Image (cartoon, rainbow, N blue to C red; front, side):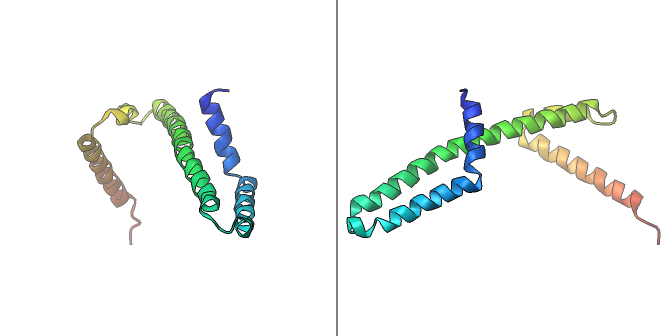
Amino acid sequence: MKFDRFCQWLANWSGRPMAFGVAFLLIVVWGITGPLFDFNDTWQLVINTSTTIITFLMVFLIQNTQNRDNDELHIKIDELLRTTQKAHKALLDLEDMDPAELHALRKQYQQMAERGDDRQKPKE
């Protein structure tokens, strides 16, 4: 199984109520076993270590799925821009612009929106 497909599957599974239920059940079981182990350091270390490892791995899983979703969204938007006759084709390469160019472009679009709002105001 490819890493991307595995990440997508795991992200989908971990976002379900059943995954929450399993995690909650594990915490309850761990809590109930506290008196059995006299709440000792090893008992605490089990939950601390396991949750830290899971959290660490989930960061990479979430980043992978977020990158993939972001790429998919960009491709879809690029296709919409490409097929729209009045769209500015320069917008297809925004990810290659530096922050100053993006800021200038945002300002330009804000000004266009303001001019458009003025034209569409109802007459009183």
